[in-house]
Image 1 (cartoon, rainbow, N blue to C red):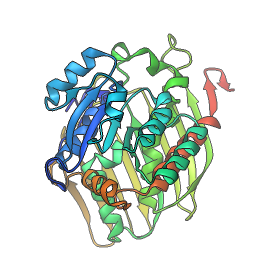
Image 2: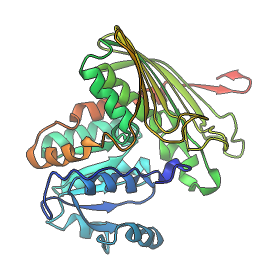
Image 3: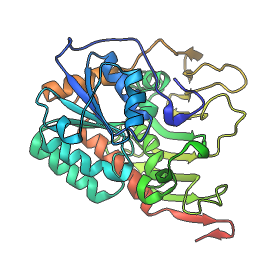
Length: 362
């Protein structure tokens, strides 16, 4: 697990297998983003069997097999699609190409699990919706900053138990370290990665819908900027937005690529959840200058104020539930509509964003 580089941050957790060997086989296709490692970790820990890998870059395949030696190098994408034993394809290819690839995967009778952002246009989401309806297959999205963070999982449980009453506001911060020297060319092209609100903003919007118990929301305002990357003038290193949910809960979030080198992890991700009977603060990856361990949660309500240290104590139930959803046609891990609507909202925020320049808005 690389705490310095968010692109290659791949959490591991306790194995809670929901299927036996051979009951759920999957392949990894498209290794452009390091999140594929975390995606595969979660599925394998829940009992899925990784049997194949493909990427046109042989060096990426070789590195992947060092981590997952049981994955056989497939000669082509088509070979994976034509393999009747494979239930699901996991991918972290270039964001702009993810929608079309998912249609192809479902068209060959396999479930799809894709890194965020799953889409870079609203048209791609519409096509995916139609395909899932037509095929009955799953299009899972790896919203890792909630699904693969134990403190965020635990916050959801506290909210469900009524620990802070009705959620009325959420504030999310998602700072990231850019590591520009190690990034591929597509990382700086908003046409290919979708823009900052579409990309890392997707984590924020998904967790808002979940924590607020909302089915839908409206983007009230959003903006993006490039403050510190003059050599990449189209790149966006800052973005924020304000939303209101269909149940009245409000949301503000900020995302950026401005994490300083002095921080002991790739980003000081936090969430503040205000309820009618209390509040929660999640410090996902570090408690700055106090504790380098991840997964701190602070709870204040009518009964107590409490600090939870949750690293290694909660696990990641999404992955097992998602496997069972694929096998049984259920929606216990995440509804398909929730996954798609969160993806749409981040694109809507991106499309209507005001662009801030050093001379002001434009």
